Amino acid sequence: DDGSARHVLICIPPSQSADYSEEVARGCRLWRGATQKPPGGLLFTSSVAVYGEADGQAVGEDTPLPSPPSPRSLPLLQAEGEALRSGGRVLRLAGLYSAQRGPHTFWLKRAAEGRAVDGSARGFVNLIHYEDAAALCVRILEHEGGAVLAMSPLLLCVILVYSLIVFCVCT
Image (cartoon, rainbow, N blue to C red; front, top):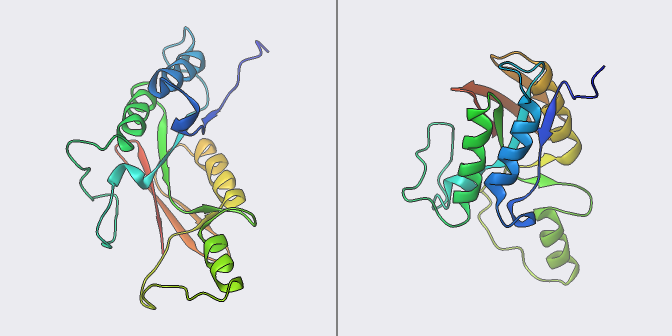
């Protein structure tokens, strides 16, 4: 054993680095090392924030990216490119939550203060628990390609692989 990792998961937010895409590229280079085809896989967790605001419209894997990219999406898109050029895959996540973090904390706080929760009763929100997202990442790294189906009690998450970009559609 040379101490190298079979699989690498890169899941750091862009706000943690002054040169985000270079940090991701460095992680990709460490994974690849001197080999043309490293064992295992590399997965970079990105965000559906690359799509920007959709004016309440549904966003899917065929939704065009805004041009030019926003200052928020540009570092993510650059980092995705680094991962893909290295032979890795990208998972765009939306709505990560835990007991302490997520949109539900906003709604619970408003309700506890006796304030109304504004919004359409016909609206929807995509959510995936941190633990489900972590399990999904492991499954993607173990999977050689194609489609992966993962379920949790609160959502059905279909993972489709298109051009080595993994996109999470939650309904």
